[in-house]
Amino acid sequence: MKTENWTLDIIESTNGMEKVLPNKILFDKIQNRIKLETLVSNKWIFLAAATFALLISINITLLKSSTTKSNTQSETVISTISTTNQLY
Image (cartoon, rainbow, N blue to C red; front, side, top):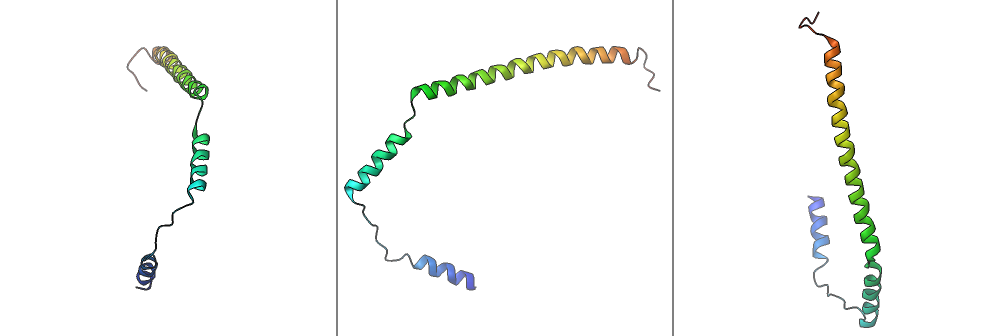
């Protein structure tokens, strides 16, 4: 009950608050600085895409080679274990 009153007091404390308008010149400076910092050159985008493609191709190559090896290894192990169906 005490926490409910506390939260209601906090919520009600915002009643009557007015939105503050920033200084136009200062706001424009901040917006320009944000735009300048968020631009990423095409060189970095291309480099990231090329790296991503290279890593995917390496992973696919390794997966294909590991499945080929595992098939031949398992066939070798199966053929050397037993030629009969006796398990004991």
